[in-house]
Length: 290
Image (cartoon, rainbow, N blue to C red; front, top):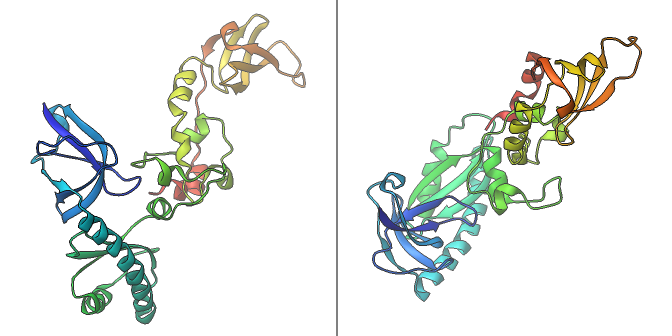
């Protein structure tokens, strides 16, 4: 076991463990720590606690100090310089005629490096741009291509639900989301219904998936043959949350309406299965791309 503190460098970013160096910190305290990028300023997300050694990435780097007034002034100055750097880089991108969209700029705390985040449809040869920027800022320059999900996380906005994006308000990391989840939850596979503002599958499909997976274990699927109090039939519709089924009975005319039953009233003779056909996969594949 080792005593650690959890530090977050972005408002909704990943939490990293550090050695508290003998100090007791409170949540939201601003601290200076050493990272692979040099000195960085972050906030305490997890107060002092002990964690198993296997949860730690060794070597565990120590806390340098609690942020001073000078540190906070430097942080504010970096934020001001980032805005200026963004404008300069946008102009340089236009001058070089590059097909890329700048999203954000980040100065490391000690100003040893400037990171420019951008999106692009494909690979971009930005070697000339880096040299141009290095001659302007006189420091190390790094251009980092990100995906549309990361862009939404950085910029923020409102989702179709009317609330701030999950990724920019509380999600530390992205979770895999698939077309299969939408299918299992009985959602329309229309891209406009299941994709977020970023154009990828909505992250919230993940939230209830565990419950749906459990319900599917105990609910006959569409296409299942079941035995009901009225005889055998074919399941034509399910409502997982209401725990009800609609069954086309074998002993009724073809044009007869299906009968409704509760899941506990039927017994599975042969279960069906949920399938996403190849055409649906091809049409919606881009929604799954990270």
